[in-house]
Image (cartoon, rainbow, N blue to C red; front, side):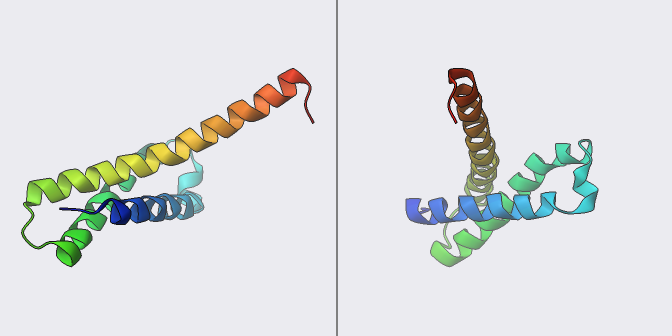
Length: 99
């Protein structure tokens, strides 16, 4: 089975890859950014397959794909939740009269 430490190391890598892809001029358009969560899931599935070959060869294909999808969804949710939290923090500081 997959180790928690390996999973926690892969999620920021996927998040970083998606942030790099956002810098490509094609993805500056909001219509093109709709595909980024799907791309994140695809990166997650590829990472899951790589982890399956490195860690444990006896895992089923369905379990590997499911784990990869969870990696991709976690990576896309991780970034969006941090950005939303930071934006909320900045808004609260302005509302409360902070710096």
